[in-house]
Image (cartoon, rainbow, N blue to C red; front, side, top):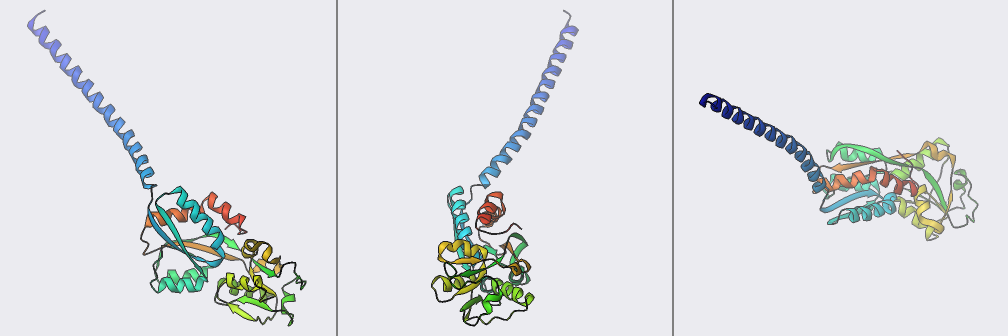
Length: 274
């Protein structure tokens, strides 16, 4: 073989090697792209490893279902903790706007949520996650034979309502106004659980509460549905708060509440779908 032929052959080999190297590099790059996607997935998985404590301010009527969801969340994310402050939505909203440390707010009405959003304390737009309807709680066995909202106007009955500033009280008043009924309760309570407790302790004959509260009380009270409640259904919004300390963990709890799993717990408790 001539020297020129050998030189040409060596040039072709080098070119071939270079092409092979380029192909390998391209393959690596392509593989790196896949790895990047995989790494991205891994990072997403890593981000699922949440930590920290989430403080949730929630309407009193959410106590049983949110407590259940909080335990589920902690089991699914070891290293996290969910703490709750349950109460009247108006009081909770006032606490938040007053600077109380909280990460999530779940209210029993858009009106009380608006207190927080108007103050600029919400992060993002609140989302309705459930709805709730009123029901009359009576003494077990309904000894007073309460069958309608009108029956509560009987002056011989001791009836308890939520305060009118609380969502359950505002809804009850709306139902009464729609029916043109006047009712003088023996007391106005600061949240729905306090109203229900009056009946459970037999300090009152009846209370207008939510279906979910009658459901949660079991055989401690009786329950009477009334058609006017359909005109006073409350939407429940939830939001991340502006000063949330563990944002990712708080967002993950909200995601659980709104997920199919969370909705299952809530509907089993008697809540209506949004």
